[in-house]
Amino acid sequence: MVGSAFVAKVSEGLYYLGDGLADEIARRVGRPVSITISYEPGITGGGIIVEDTEGRQVWDNRFAKRLERLWRELRQQIAIPGGIRP
Image (cartoon, rainbow, N blue to C red; front, top):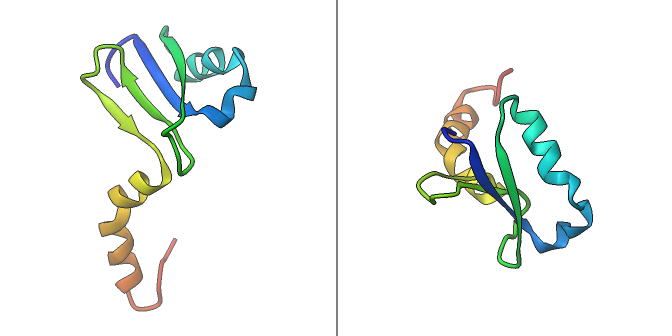
């Protein structure tokens, strides 16, 4: 995502990850970014939602959304004789 300031929305059940979560995410991005963690009661299904602070970009990585994005490709791979190939 383009930008330098983001909000990572995660399930409120992950509060035990503590303050180090934002630092760990920022470290893995590989460039200077500011991350704010927001623990949300409505986040379900495993995963995270990342938004830029202006709300113009949203990346929803919850399981159901990933499946929705990949469903067409998965259907094609399932339809190939012999099943999914590496």
